[in-house]
Image 1: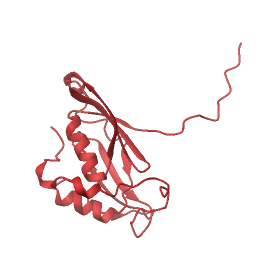
Image 2: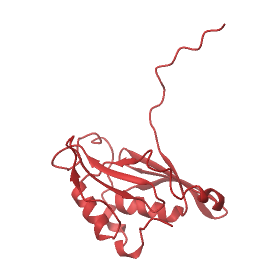
Image 3: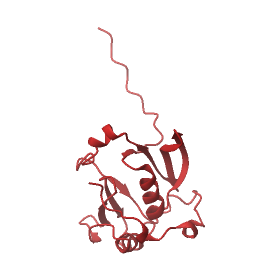
Length: 169
């Protein structure tokens, strides 16, 4: 009997989540507006964006427009078996901004392991946990010092009250 191949030491260099969404334009606005993502690349079909790669500093996310048939399986989203962690630059400011925009979210709390966290659900029902490991909650652990930052992020932000960020039902 042949021997199974030896496991490699791995060749993956990055893991990028890809979310199926019911309204890609709304999802792109949500992640760019609240978390500073920028469109890195996108693909259109029949004159409409159907896939988008978002990036900010070291964080990356892809979103893909689901067809009407695929959306039936989206509600509820995958469920509590997994979540997306986001580490903001300033967790207090992120919490205040989302709260002032009317996004339903948990209170900011310090966990037993010292992280400061809060939870929310994106417009398609995906669970997001915002978390920083340091007690002061600034989220800056110098991991991304070599990454380019967007200086003009605030210039093109829209008014928080213009969009309803409630989970789609």
